[in-house]
Image 1 (cartoon, rainbow, N blue to C red):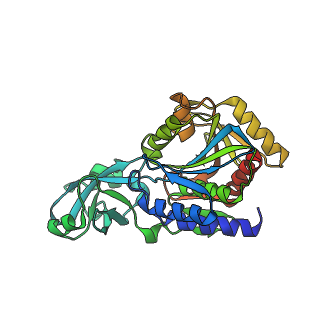
Image 2: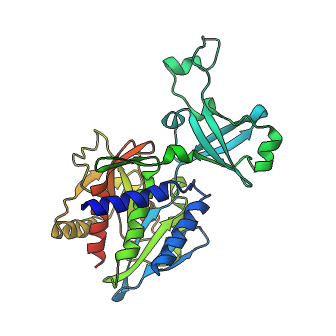
Image 3: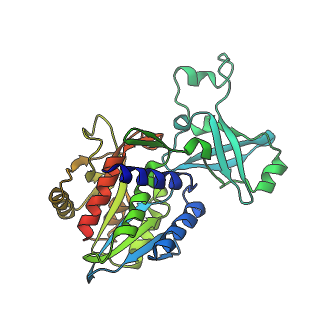
Length: 345
């Protein structure tokens, strides 16, 4: 990876991370993506399910590939608006309150964004207080947390804070930073993959086959966007770009090398497609890591399991602290881009 590529990727990831996009309320990142694709002069549209799809015509229009990166992020959803400005939330996707810790969160109201403090209660307490158990032996759950806004019920109502309102980490806490050749941030899942897809839209010219780049909606709550997208049009194959969890159980020794997933919690990926991707990688000098994952799913595994595409693969980059404050090597992100450029060409 050249220094300029790393700088470019980091800048693009930073822009995308700072666009709030909790599942189903993805308008902020939608505006960014549609404007970026328009500047590139790439044919694009937004479908009824909220997916943004860019089409790059190929030399062989009979063969088609879809490459996806989901644009939504995990967060929480308001269950109750209580008295004294307290708001209770429950998870949206694989979010845990202890991952975020106490700090600023944004409530995306219908009329305004309201910032509040995700709160767990005081620590200077005895067994008489319900918070005491979380200091010793009980995992913190969303039912034990709340958001302090210090606004009245009327003020919250005027801002459009209600059951169903989405909560995400406050923007000033989301800003990425560099750790040498690494990028660290909330929501690299899956904004780093969205950055790859944007750079593909910029650099792919007359690919070998028809290429459809899909920035999918609501992946974190069941790959809803990808299911709709693949039911509207037949594709020969689909490749999902994803973050890949680093853990001792998965034995991924190289942070800078991309990963092909063989199986996850939803089922098998297509071995023939994986082998073709690996062969292209070898041809351009990119070494691939292989992994079998648990507690993981992607657009690709879900649509393949449901029979809406015949072949699917998941290409990812290793990351620490997935669904938390994630850390990924920029060279692995860049290698995913390089591999897909070569594969499509």
